[in-house]
Structures are given as structure tokens and as C-alpha cells.
Length: 143
Image 1 (cartoon, rainbow, N blue to C red):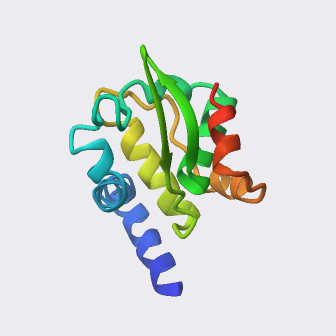
Image 2: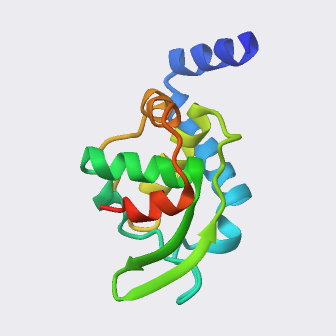
């Protein structure tokens, strides 16, 4: 833990923290998301939704909370994205740290044609994590 804090401090001092977090987000996407949502983030039509356009959700508090809940707690039940309806299960990744969830989401929100309006912070993730919800309730809470 101390080693990680020292590394973060050193990267911040060198102005490389943003780059390091972006690389961490890309790595986490490849490990946890890419198999379903594909390297392009466009998903598989009718099976896994595209991640393009999620930056619109991140513009408002309710949307930001929703996105964090999806990553932490998963998603289950009908979900309408554009003109397509999906009805599957996405696992939650609550084993990721608050910083990892933020890095992953910021990567997605800055990739695939998304333009992240405001980076998600580990503090936001911590606040959402403190109030767990079921995957079915995450789906119902989509803004």
C-alpha cells in the first residue's frame, strides 16, 4: 500500500499520473470488459450493448452513480440502448479498488467516441460502494 502511494506521488510529481491512470483503465478494460463489449467498445448487436454514448450519462450525477453501480454490482434484466433491447447478465466487479473502478470508467468514458465530461473519482466510487444494490435494481435505475 505504501509502495503504491509512493508511486502515485512520484507519477503526479512528474505530471504522468493521468497517463498512468489511462493505461491502467485500458488494461482493466482488456481484462474485464473487452470479451463482451469487444476491443472497439461496440459490443455484439443483440447480445452485448455498445459503450458508445455512455459519456452522455456521465454528465449528470444520477448517470454517474448508475455507471459506477454497473461496474461494482453488475446488471441484470431488460436494458434498452438506442433501438435495441438487451436482457442479459453482466457480472459486478466489486473486487476492484475504488481507484481501479474510476480508472476503468474514465477509460471507457474517454474511448469509443466518448468525450468524458468530468472524470469519475475514487471518492465517488467509494460513496456508491457504501450502498450496495442488486444487479436487477441497477438495471431499473438506468437514467
